[in-house]
Amino acid sequence: MDLLTTLVDKGLRRESPTREEALAVLATSDDDLLDVVAAAGKVRRRWFGRRVKLNYLVNLKSGLCPEDCSYCSQRLGSKAEILKYTWLKPEEASKAAAAGVAGGAKRVCIVASGRGPTDRDVDRVSQTIAAIKERNEGVEVCACLGLLSDGQAARLRAAGADAYNHNLNTSEATYGDITTTHTYADRVETVQQAQAAGLSACSGLIAGMGESDADLVDVVFALRELDPDSVPVNFLIPFEGTPLAKEWNLTPQRALRILAMVRFVCPDVEVRLAGGREVHLRTLQPLALHLANSIFLGDYLTSEGQAGKDDLAMIADAGFEVEGTDTTTLPEHRADALAGGGCGGHGGGGCGPCGDGDGGAEPAAQDGADASAAGAEGAAGTERVAGTEVAVGSASPAGPASQAGSAPQDGSESRAEVPAAAAVPAGEARTDLVAVRRRGAGTELPPNA
Image (cartoon, rainbow, N blue to C red; front, side, top):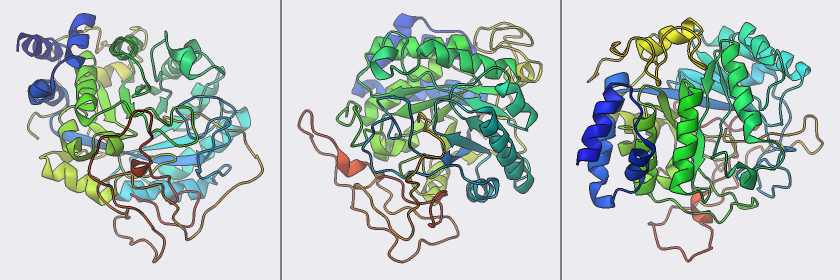
């Protein structure tokens, strides 16, 4: 297929495809799917080899959010039966992070619901970062705290944060249909503040919210222009109790095409397979490793993920390897640009996606080798679930979640089997595939790492 040959050639040169080419990837047929995956896989291997970076989420503060993001189980007015608790103490967060690190996670992502942090919150998170790094040598810490105020990014950087996550989520044209309590421009500004402070920017999207192909291409091209180092690709988890509960628009094949399009548009960027992969990719998850070079290990903020041990087995069985803390994730030209304060505006060093700097730089890899908005602090009704598992179906075909090296407590789980994929009448929700998180940080049950 001439399209794929062109896209591979462009990806190997870090050259942007056209909008028409990106749209054409999304329009390819299921018959051509393996060809699309193979082509995008060549670009992935050029810049990242066969390494898979593992990331682990720690939800510092769950639920009770004043924002109205339609996709979010923690939103204002959400009736989703999720855990709700106020700030974890630094030692609690550090202990939770250690479970992920023990499972192979290289980066710990600390997330707090809320519009954005107060200065007191930044102090609190700074103590948490210190506690995590003291206990886990070499681990990266990415903070995700919502919209930042002036000076807060620099304070987080000084405290030891390596990165900051704030997703664009959807196209600028449709953003107001998803969220009304803040703007698309607010999100862009926060990512730029993080970059200006020397933090590695992490910003991505959520697919499956009813958007068009053009919307998907718009947000991915906007991300390319913004130039984050990491692009998480989330697939909507339609929680009961949220406005998007019945938005089941994705098939495994479409999810793979979306990932391939992101890889072609962002060839040398860490593309992270994020929330919803178990729900929407299901048995095709291993194919996604040929497109994304980074995944989350274990559970997400408010939903259960695939068991950590099953993630590790999937990576090994697919012929990939877990990236160690002694390896630089980004290709050399991007890592050098980040160290020199480059990109994020193309101000210094070499710019990866736009092609400024040394276009022929060799990658660091050897070939062959959240989506959550936020919540009010200190609200009454903190909920800590102990010794019970209340699931809405099952989040993955892997069966009950388990912690590597630590078996779940007897009677702690009661989960339904995932039925074979079946036709779902229009407008009906697939609650059989969504499991609310009832373990890990904020509970007395061991984490799923």
